[in-house]
Length: 603
Image 1 (cartoon, rainbow, N blue to C red):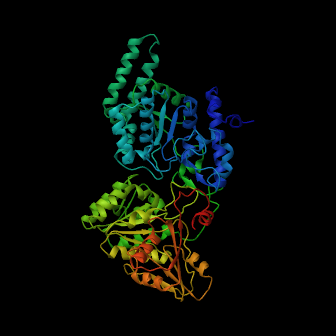
Image 2 (cartoon, helix red, strand yellow):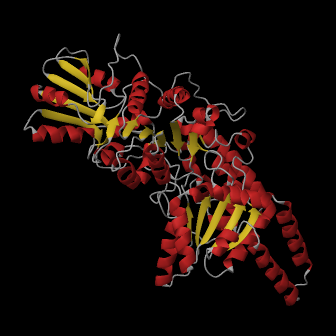
Image 3 (cartoon, one colour):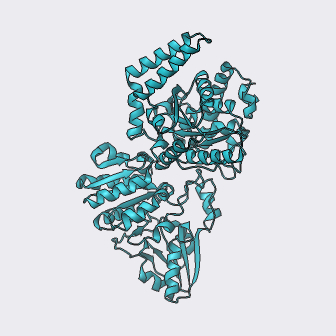
């Protein structure tokens, strides 16, 4: 019987030796490879935090103590250690266990998280509440160095250092979010740790302290003073110390003795403390270590060679966008691509590789990405900001204030619009039409297929307006109607694909297949590809007014979405046609297979 079979809850870790913990770590990595290779999920990040997760649960007394995981995609080991091993057979499947922390699953999960840079603010709020209730418990936030590029993290650091809130921040430094981290903070810690002076002085201080007799308090005091002085002349902790946060580290995040030592040291500190932990993403699985970006989020794969079980030669919308933008950027050096730590996921890696001077990765800073783009647009450039729908939510104020109010020609390429599947409610892109449609000056488009995406991107770069183009995750389903012609894009004009007499099906986005299924070959139906959610084609409104009934399809929340815009115009013109809306009801969509979710939620 392996150790993992005996470990079900944190209390089972308390009496294990370092040797046993190392055995448990290997067993957990094998368990993760076996399960995630079948279900898909976030692999590299979880392989990287095995020892850290075990050490934290051995040190803490959860759920009495509070443990918050930033983003949460690295919580698999945490779930294994908190009674949920059996749930991994249905990881991220419909009705199964979430791939992120979820309070509905366990009292060990405090927040349902999925977006970066939130953990320190959450931890600070819990710690301040504990102080007021005189509740004695530890509060720990585990946050990757990539999330330190996010503005919310820096805002929390500023406040926590000012108030002296007793929170332990574990900075899991693996040099990566999904791709390699960018920015001055990442460069700062990397540069300092690489210097020979830093390594030599740190090692010498450790050796001298070990040689101090335990009873020689003066020797220990002097070494401690030397350590503090060393921090003031350029260690990675200098920045945090200056902000009022005690710094410990860096420490090897795969060493139980090192982790135990710094956790105990941090426990003695009064006020906030940051423990700098160095880990390797994908640790223990060679393919993931070599290609941590590829193994960040994976579909089912073959453990022996790391190859996906779902190999497809079909192009995705992301591929089409990336290829088309690169093609246009080669002809116009004023076209620039901007993303927020998602160059591969958005297809901008192609631009980055071939035209690096026309590409910017700003880190996990969606708001900054938008305002930075506004500045470039003001100076005559044509910025294309590629961000997933769910993350674009984080930049709403900047879209309103810095782009649309200024009438600047920034193009938003909104990837992963609609239902995205197994990542669940924090990642479904079902709100962007609603939160963009109310903003003046912006043009909203959605293509029915890959050809139309190319056309829309070209058109957006020709007009001098703020434009948002939304498109889904996944492969393109082209040529559903034989000999279909792609009409030229004209602002506010729909595309009329089939003309019938009495009924009409209108869709916004890649829903031609669903429209054809509803029509079922009947001659009395018209099919209209709306193309624009703003402005809406007035000819379409008149056409609906003449019909006996109309069905409107969109993969967005019904509240405030495309169909809502249609209804507003119908009411204004006192048109009383019978309307059926297929969209997302007033609820958050769970995780699961996209087709299954559409059957359940797209009603």
